[in-house]
Length: 415
Image (cartoon, rainbow, N blue to C red):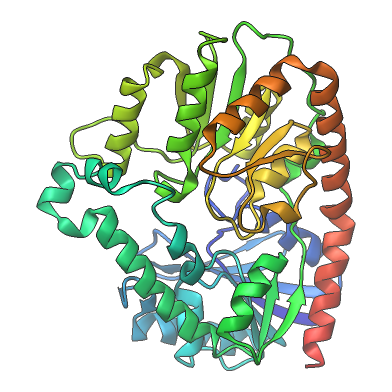
């Protein structure tokens, strides 16, 4: 049986996970239950020493957060030695590294992993850097300077973008060490192939979390008086485009005074020492007079996300860059009519005017018009809903994702 060691940021648990990467857990379980793979997982957690446990037969090691250099990219020697010891103990046929924007690729580049290894691209710092400001102009960026930024200039958006670029250079150097690279979109392949043109590229597929497959399909909401728009963001980061969506809500408030924009994710709004961009969002809400229209939901687990999606008139993905966009796939799987910015890999997930609606990420007027159409045109909303759901049921089919991953492992074993 094939032995595969995973290096990822997802700690497998029976609890409903709210953190990023939680979609890896159902894939891991299906691989283990296939009786074709013996899976092992190494992750990072808030522990003082290495912890070892078992999840559905998957042996798992949780390593303490490492001391790092290189803007948080390069782990300490002690971390690399711990990882190397685990690898020697497992003696895997291959090591599957999930994500290039974290310490795992740096550990591999430093020689901590000796087995055959490949990396699955999640995000690309070296490419996302260009979109960091998310359309903010110079005056807007200056408005993002708060007390925290005055006391710590390294917290300004100017400096954060610079660090993003420097981290991207480290990421690129690490990617050059890999002979095999797995990708989820042609957009990712296009970018990474210029970083490492000598690598062999393998297309993979995404497994969604259980609740999205099992969810009752979305039904049209005839609440035109107080419609609900849903979106999510992993954090208060300009390239997620939340500030642009605020402009759309301002326009829509003319026709729907009680419209609600519900935002899921770790968005820290409120308080004197919040970061500058969060303060900018807070001020923008007041300036646009949409305080009563914006609701911050905080981090949600998969069950809570499905419920919010089902209760919405539509979902909007306003990001300026995405390497795949799991939130887009999840909303389509539930059947929620989805509006997305035409950027990054997102155009690969759906067809405009059939399975979703696309707009330029700075064109808040068009975004608002699309939201209005989905609120008022029942037949069209149901058409987009049904087509989008059918698309995801095919491309994110559990068995198809599983067989694709098993086929990829077999292929890599021969490389």
